[in-house]
Image (cartoon, rainbow, N blue to C red; front, top):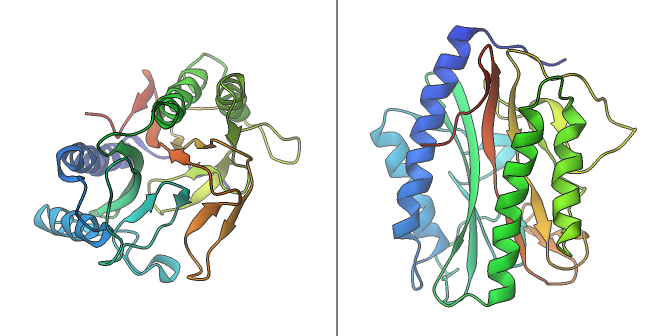
Length: 251
């Protein structure tokens, strides 16, 4: 069942989202070659605690850290490790959820580190464009849920990239994962409700440079591309309000 949020609940979610947006913005200058993925995780943990909030992913379904930090061919759910050192030319995706007074925010961003090859820069650029294509589709009057996936997949595939189908966006706000699934493609096997006031969604394109296939490593969490090619991930939490769609995790 889709949980329709009240205006008061959206206000609470909005505060959590602004906190997360600032954190992801701060990471722009922090993520550099030579630091470890655990350094990023520690930075996120300290920021969240300093702002009197909770890291919503820590111990969620057994996940051992505050942030998912994924490098290059790691798509999502990368476990931060002290020995995992970021190199010049890497791309680093950070996915985070914050629990602020019981309200959950969710956002992700892929960062460029140093001299990233032009084709990889293009992948990251197109993936971020896919996010906003999906958001724009959701903002239109009378929009339905799968309009998001149609816009994402069209833009990705028109640029020669593939859309991951094993993982999707989702409802969010009172829990980390809520109904509905927010596809980055279209499928008759999934519902396609009209987007209405009170819906809060995490829209998150996950785009591969090669095939769309992914697999999970032996750690039980880290999702990687099956062909070892690069991948990128962007995400915003958005709300459908009486004034239209609002991107909550945007400064």
